[in-house]
Amino acid sequence: MRILIVEDEHRLASVVKRGLEEEGYAVDTVYDGDDGLALARLGHYDLIVLDLMLPGADGLSVVRTLRQQSLNTPILILTARDALDDVVRGLDGGADDYMTKPFAFQELLARVRALIRRESMSRDPVIRIRDLEVDTVARKVRRGGRRVELTSKEYGVLEFLARNPNRVLSRTQIAEHVWDYDFTAMSNVVDVYIRHLRRKIDEGHEPKLIQTVRGSGYELRA
Ligand code: CA
Image (cartoon, rainbow, N blue to C red; front, side, top):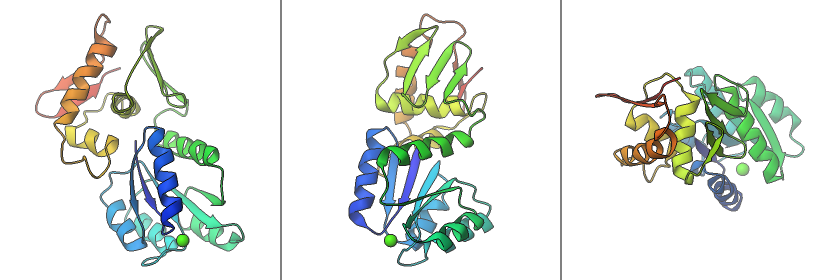
């Protein structure tokens, strides 16, 4: 899952980015509202963490502009402790949740997970597809009751497929939601990860869950 951070306090932005990356998210950071708007419009993100007080377009106008353009990516706004009016305007403008600074990183993570889950077909933090279980909180995977060890990026690809079951996903779509800006161009890397996942998830199991759709991409078939 890929997250955009729009935050002009560089230190805070880099701490949040590092923490989210340690949890396996692909993260891009920009430091003003105009860049935030430009990147958010690409539609590659599963979540936007948005500061309200920003140079360029302020956070509130970023929220309103994105929503007016029917971009429905979940938005978590960050505000100063005493800015109740901003929170109300942010939520009324189309943001989904907020946190006041300073915040505990564990709480940010839980809110991020909850917002991403809200976009999925199921609100259950454990995604179940036949005998495959993807625990999106612990980031652990089981097939047929047996634990499957995955690298962080293998897990990322699988989680994205599992959140979109029975949907053909192109290599580009998968790459855009699992890798950050620096890697997006290398969409053939997706094939390599799919090969690893097949070996770990499907080998020795029936039915095969990961399907190739010729000329289009991949599908996790339930
Ligand atoms: Ca700020």
